[in-house]
Length: 198
Image (cartoon, rainbow, N blue to C red; front, side, top):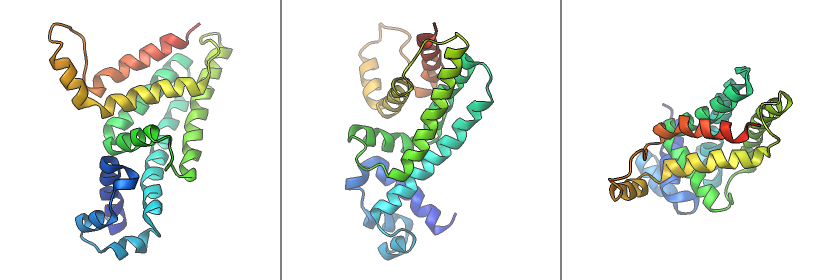
């Protein structure tokens, strides 16, 4: 791993734990084992580093989501869309935390360059929904609303594990409460597909 890649990896962890405003480049530099000017050699400022971290994740997510284009049936494509998004969050927990922080802060720090990937991801969902509508499988839906349902559920589920564990501990008499994200991804996909069907 190059120094630049290591800086991005360590910065991802710090941005996810502390958010953009509270993450410290001094601490990142110390953990990487470089000086702060060494970070500035690769990134002109803290925001450029944040942009590199966040945009690399959004680009990777978009690349993964594009595999959904290969699924023919709208119901299967929508299910695959939700599952692909959920599995990406499982594999990239720092991204889930950073995305949750951005959603909570009104996306005030999301770089404009990242919105291109977000737009392409939404376009993919819109294409799936439109195809389903044209085939008489789905009703007319607002893609942005469906995207918010998916993203909010999965991001919040991924980032609230401790809270869910505490709540479930007090509900020993209630069954079928899954606390792991991996356990609800398929369930959510099925519910979203069911919700948009005619």
